[in-house]
Image (cartoon, rainbow, N blue to C red; front, side):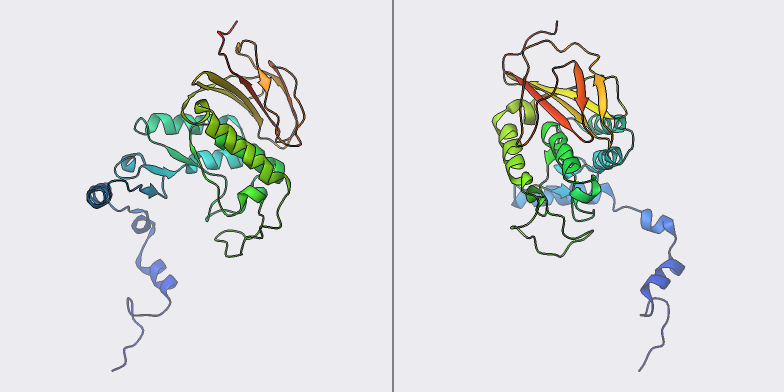
Length: 276
């Protein structure tokens, strides 16, 4: 027996969805208790399982997701790289800290399956590198995705193109090797205290320190597509030495900050001194 096309029996699914459901249906979430119970059951059989949530929801943090996508920080970072207000990056970080349980980590995103490649989203190679410096020196868990380490520009959202490992930008491999080694070698960059430092150009410039384990880093990043001439307006002491990356030029000593569009500067001191 043949059945005619009726609601719920074939036909144009998109049209049926639009006709039979409104926005409130699509906004409903699976209850948090479901995920919490699922996490408990999985850990009974796999105690070391890590559950990654492709979300950023306080009521699912650590119950069961031990890590989630840091969407709000990613959005603020991308907006700043395209002329938006850089101070919203700090605000997004503070929101993650204040609204989630203590110790809840978030992925530090700049590229993933649901977004264009970072060299496009952040205004080119230099912007992608500036975003990487932030993601590898703040408190999140950096994500390397789909050939970022060679500056892969192939594919858009939901990419299916093979990565051309012989292509990309020749600056990226050595840049990422040094950045990853710096983070791995220094506990202050993956487990230290992050302190935001005020500066005279907050709409363009991020400035902060990471401290712990006998080392301290001071990072300044101009996320904007325009050059910045500013100063740090907080005391930082002396004894800083710049960490130079491949092809990078030395920068003026703090408290002055002079950075090109989407430029960055990283300084380190081994023996932490009291601010003078």
